[in-house]
Length: 254
Image (cartoon, rainbow, N blue to C red; front, side, top):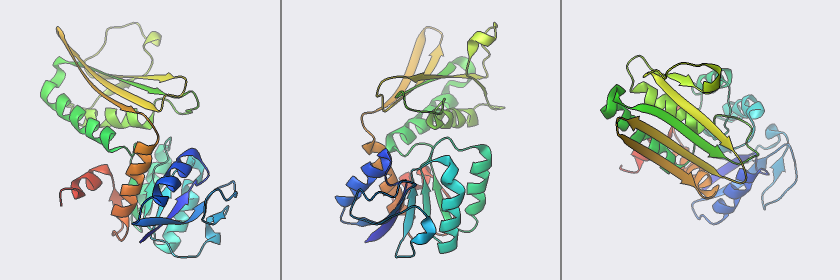
């Protein structure tokens, strides 16, 4: 039985993960961490991570960027693997996370959905095959409570595509500030916020007389929770280093 610590346990994603884990006979949540110490599930909740010294195999972090360093320190002190699902991390925070991977196993993905990571793979393949004969735009839609824009997922898609473009790509977020024709090296990224949209991402490849679209729509937060739980099972017992969805997906074929 894999014992999970849930950081951000009282948040929306923490509660979804808690429910799914309660229905899984291969893992359980041993404890939760949250700035709100309310106990909403049948496991103890701590406002200070260092207050929990019980059994644990892995930590899932679905909290806030401000808590990253603290939870990394806790994991390093106990040599625990961590699944970082929190979005909106700065470049400095990503560097701190990568440095921690020298001491502990760190799994990071801008989106925990297996479907989104398949979309990124397909988008990279399309960019490789289509070359500079197609213009590339990314549109993402999320609920009106989402703070960061563009989404971390949209940027992850753009980063994947950029890797396939000679010399990389220039990300353009706001076209109204510059009156000029579009460059072939651009990737336009557009953010829409409204209602209760869980998360939609569309990659548009626009060529001469034809358009190709790759799209992923999340109907509920469960797709992200399920991915986080799969990652927790995968990471238990791993050696220190950086891991991502590609490692997880590749393990399915083993």
